[in-house]
View 1 (cartoon, one colour):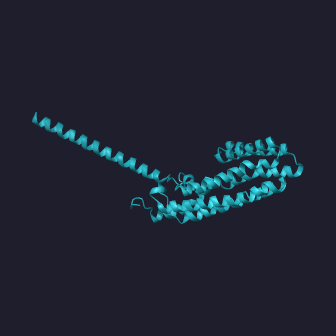
View 2 (cartoon, rainbow, N blue to C red; view 1 turned 135 degrees about the vertical axis):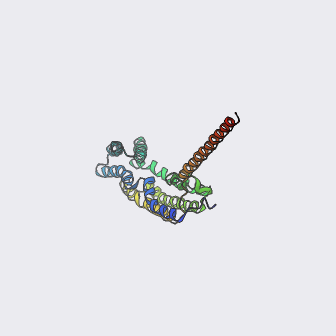
View 3 (cartoon, one colour; view 1 turned 120 degrees about the vertical axis):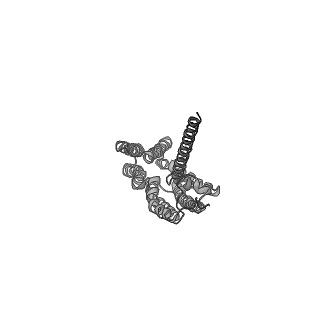
Length: 254
């Protein structure tokens, strides 16, 4: 890493200050966590009371759509709410097709398993998934891969943390999916929604807070464009001055 690429100490301090905010932005923050939990919580609550799969599914899907509408009315980002709607919709379809209320949770469990594998495989491949997710948030894109090895190492550690935590969660849930009754399984799954997520986010913050500051590639591109414009203006000024000098010489000769 050259001296131009090396993040300054001030930039590193600024990076630590914005890391927490960036993580909340990337993963939805408190509101995103609430939107993740509420549909499943409503589903298991209604099913615990009346054992009615249809009403439980309709309520879960309805509240997911309501959360999207609220975000649209408030002109807020809807990506986390929309992802929640798709997850709930897949769960509803699975449960309705099989008639088994536990299958409402199966798509989310399979997604969690796939995500855990993705974190591990991408890290082994040298492009840790957490870096691909957070790179644009920190305005560094993929610069950490070749120009900021300390940051790449932090992303690798964070991706390992996410992968292993999600695998551990799957190791608990999949056996319970087969052995536990629907009500108990639903409450256990709800209880395991947030704590593993918070642990992974906290570990990511710890790793990134100690890492070198991100290289703002957008600022670099803007600086390069500005320098090119200034150079072009200088060249035009020199050309104009040269033309004026030539014209003046021709007038003297005439």
